[in-house]
Each structure stands twice: as C-alpha cells, then as structure tokens.
Image 1 (spheres, one colour):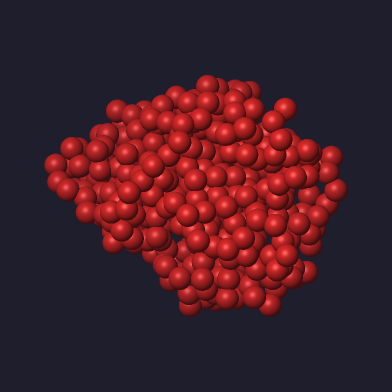
Image 2: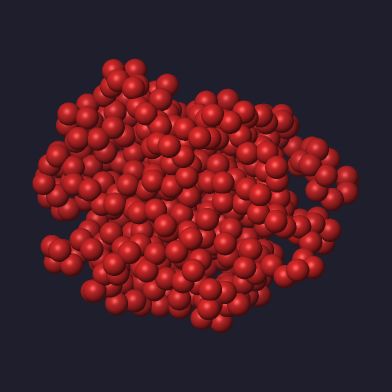
Length: 432
C-alpha cells in the first residue's frame, strides 16, 4: 500500500518513507490510499494483538513487517481499559496508563520503535522535532530518551502548559532538549511544519516529526478504539460511540480510521474547549482557523487543527463531512463544574480535557440520547493537580511513572517564535 499527500502535489510513498519524512514534500499530511477492512467480530485477547492486526495491512511492504508484532508488544504493553461509569450505557476509555500518563504514550512508543527499526548502522543522527501543547512532548521524550541515533527537540508555549506538564517536558536531558516558546501552540506547530517543509534544511539535517501529523502517531492510535469497540460489541452486540476531547484532531482522526477499517463504532463526537473553530464549522460556519485562546484544558488549545486537512480529504465535500460528526464547545466554567461534580455524578476524577467529553455526554443525555457512549480519558488528573484538587477538595496522587518524572530536575531554554531563531538557536542547518 502507498501513502499520498492530502494536497495531492507530492508523489506517493511507502509507509517507511512516510514514517521517516513525517510531512509530505508539498506540506500536506500523509494518508493511506485506501482503508483495508478488518474482521473485528472476534476481539483479540490483548491491545497489542489488536494493534498488530490493524496495522499489518499498512506494513505489508515495510522493512518492519516481520518485526511488527514485537513493535506492538513494546508500544502497547500497558492496557487501555473500558470502564463503566455510574449510569447505564456511560463508559470511559482510560488512555492514561502509560509512562507519562497521557494517551500519546502508545503512539509515541510505536513511532520510536519503528524509526529505530528503520535505521541502519551508518545513518546520521535523526532529529525529532515536536511541537506540543502539553502532553505530546513528554510522551515523545520518554519514547526516544537515550535511544541511540536520535535527538529530540521539544517546542512548547511558555506559560500555557500546566506546571507538571512543563516539568515532564524538561526533566529528561541527555538527547532531549526542551524549549519554551514565546507564543502559542499554533506558533510552535507553525515553526515545526516550516522546518519539516524546508528542503534546504532537510538536505543538511535528518529531520522527522513525532506530532500527530506523522502517520507513525496517527495509525497506531486507531488500535485502542478498535480494541474497545470490538470487546464491547462481542459482549453487548451493539456498536460503541465515542466522545473524543480534541484540539489538533489527531486522536479523533484515529477513531475515524478505526471506524473506516470496520471496527464496530457508530458515532464520533468531538469535544472542544473554548477554541471553537471545529464546533463553529460543524454547526454550519465556514472553516476558519482562529487565534488560540488559553484555557484550563490547555492541551486542546489549538486554533488551527492540523488534522482537519485529513478529515476534509476523507470526505466528498463539506456537507458530507458535517453530516459525519458532531462537535461541542465547552467553556472553562463548565469544565470546572464538571470536575467538581464528577466524583459523585460519574464515579471518576477527570482531567480538564476529559471533563470536556463528560460535559458533552451530559448534554447528550439531557437531550434524550440513549446510545452507549464512551468518553475518552486522555490524561491522568494528577497532571493538572492545581486545577483539579481545589475543585474536588482532595489530593490526586500521581501514578508511579509520573511521580518518577516529577522527582527529576527539569529545565528548558527560552526561544522567540521566529523561524530564524529556531535555526540559529538549535544549530539546525545554516543561518539565512
């Protein structure tokens, strides 16, 4: 199978080429030429086994084909449990059981294992350039930390991530460098995309991406949706519906891929914070990226979602795309209200991002919706203790892996939101 650019001006490439490049040469995002159909009627015993079955068609011609099962075992060694909430047909898909307590751990580890497997002995060092709104950078840092042949450069918006998120970005050292940008996440993303599209730079530096623009991030994330939906269908003979907290649409697009490949998923609902470009679009407005607004669900503070380009590519026109999904915007005050009530109302303590999905679920129930819905818990609430603990009146203990990160010293360098500064400050190619 080949992979094509959403902008249709770059040549089709193999999966190995797409993984190494991150971004297509025309600035577009790689997508599969087609979606293979998988039989999910007999659910696999483990998440890793589901991932292997789902990814095998994409890697049929890859140099990683014979190692794919081992890669999946390394990337999906921690579970993604589907748990019942307090009310019938309300569920939560917990994606925060990895080493940095966020859903991005699964795909970051898969990408690291894959790129490592594609390296040969005399390859130059690969620089992984990643823009993060809070959780991506830590997951990528953990996955590539002390991995020979790789350096990681993290760009994050200064003052716009939680204190524990910032610590998790700067606590690695060795081959990982963190930079706090004087700007928004959209500025971080803009600089990363500019570097990845810079032909002169890429002629001198082996550069790749670990953001959700990378197929190595996008494709494996479909596995936990397929696994949960297959198990649910086997037990209840009904498809499962998902409410996905989203900013850049990467995790949401993974749910779309799982559904297109045959996973028993019916509806997919996008829960957004006050950055409402998506809810406005799905309510009928023209798509219009907007300046980023800072919210307490900071990992979703994205005004120009990169993966919207993939959604448009997969649908005939705007009418077809709007008919396929719904989207809800949730204010900070509503997020706080949901967190405060969630322990008694739903039986969980949500992070602010998960709370946007709970708010959307409550709205659907108030409208009379009776479908089985799973909200997606994207991060552990302990990463946002300064927000969550005052609202619930109790301490949220960090899981052991997160506690280990917090025990290490952390540091980050400052960087202006200018491309020239990125080149000069990081030594990525010549100054110009």
